[in-house]
Image: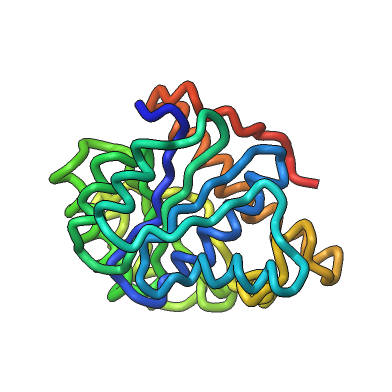
Length: 235
């Protein structure tokens, strides 16, 4: 096991909301008093750019550090020098690369976001299958940017059926499509610092908190004693 829990957000499908999910989960962990180190291995540097925009706007997130790791050497060096406490998140590149193979073998948990369509779920499931070359367990898909109305459509039901039929491991929590998530990703810090309708913030944080609870449970089941993030209800 790693000295701190390593959670990777990975998929090969573009537009899955991988980086946004990483940022939102990082914010919730930090808001609970834990230090978060995000390693951004994606050449697009979406997470790094979010952090820089937050700094420029005077909204630097407390207890969050983002570090670019754009080569296998840089990633390897960082993984050899992890902090002694907190949580490490990795925002991966959306492609099968040598760096992704390193991450798949080192992460304690790989979280795989997918849009709720069969096309997206099929590709996400293929990525889950790919990770089996490096690990036996600790990979979970979740549905991202889910529209409440779309949940009643055949497209959504087909995607969910595929997950069940192919026995793809998944989190039951879905992240819903919320404008506030895009606002956070633009430059406005975390859900706890954004200036927005309090009820919208409450619902958004409850949604992220539910996903984080499943993530922590999975880490606990894997025997990662370093996973000490408090599972208290978000305010």
